Image 1 (cartoon, rainbow, N blue to C red):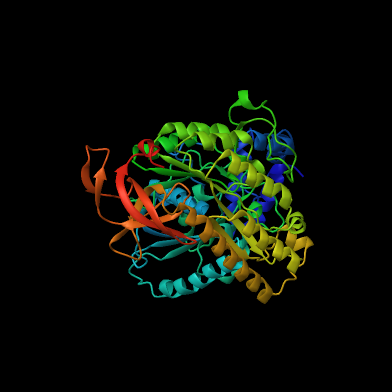
Image 2: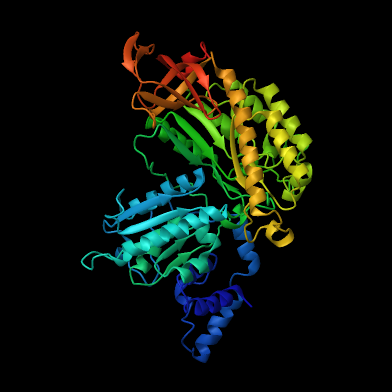
Length: 589
């Protein structure tokens, strides 16, 4: 069957259900790749006269084929700039797509990518005439940006929806109806279940559908449920400047790529966020420059697999050599050729503002070639902190997880990183109770924690996710009580070793970026050192070496030198010495 006939048949089916609005996206995609004018797409509900039918059939036969769609996927069509408006779908007017000053309340759950997604979604809605509110009672639209990485994360959203149900039912009839939307990974994973189970949900938008939010909300105004959970091969929101959700923030997240190709057996990310695609470097640099001009002092480059970044937008670089992997590591996919890699991006970003700290997360251990490590060592404003997710200390479990490395290769990489970057701070992720994990496997993970002595750790019990390889091929055979017991043991060992590692800072002077008042003491300030550890110090007047020794109180966004006096597994404490700059601090740290 010809592609356009498939689209028309899909449209007739979709018009009968809550996902009806998807049909417009399918038709719009088809028209974008076809030489047939939009008027040539007849209503499938009307019989056609023989002459018209033959004419349409002949044009249909010469229209786009499946190969055309494949070629278009390889060469993404140009998107209109954020200042341009696409033509509205035929069932909506341009005015209906406007927010008309309705107030939006946004709640964010999960990882840093979701924080960045929230800023992207709000940027799109703000341009459409919506207003932002921090009051749930004032809101006309409530949007939850969700996470699906574990069952507990999804249960949090189900509980939140139950709470919001009463808020919606008590809405005064004199006000515009309250609309509730689910955004992000949970919308992608549980689309039909959410719409069928929670009739109070008005819209669903997957991670690649935030540009469609104005249309989805316009459809919801007619009383229909609206959804767009289509994953994209090229959407990176490169032309959307995120709006910072906290005006007093000293740092920002900058998304550089989306999706993941690693296909680890336990992970849902490739199924909720799609395949890897990277932003053009030029758009990333422009965003970082704007953040620097706004006075922000720290940027974190974000991606599900951030150091596998590959910008293929510049044709002259597409013949470059293949990827250099960490020694002893492999991939679950064919080697990729060409493009500008992460080391090039990191180099360019770090040159924009020498007084702006650069971090990145979350990387995969396989993508740490020597050029990346050397760059981190050389540049003062690239933080000497690396997140290196291990997941397990057992080579047998790592193989079942499809991580692409053994315990031995991982430990050698740790040693190599510490040789290349003396004093580097390390963090990691661990999963307790993965499918088939024995007590011996668990003890090997315990021993890895003791051997490496991470400064920061993120540890969780395994939660099986539908669609993953583990769901289809492995058995979740570890009892819940065993998972929790192993998790507690891992946490205990991590804290012991992290305390030892962090005590090495006692007596040393650390450069700290001030974030604001400490949550536990009104007389203290809080910030983070180069290794991303929280540092607490008294809020007192100090010498400002940037202003002829004037005595001042440190403010959010200031760099200060702090001499560390005590350490725990999560926090350093000390007394502040002086206000300084990142450049001048190298003489003291």
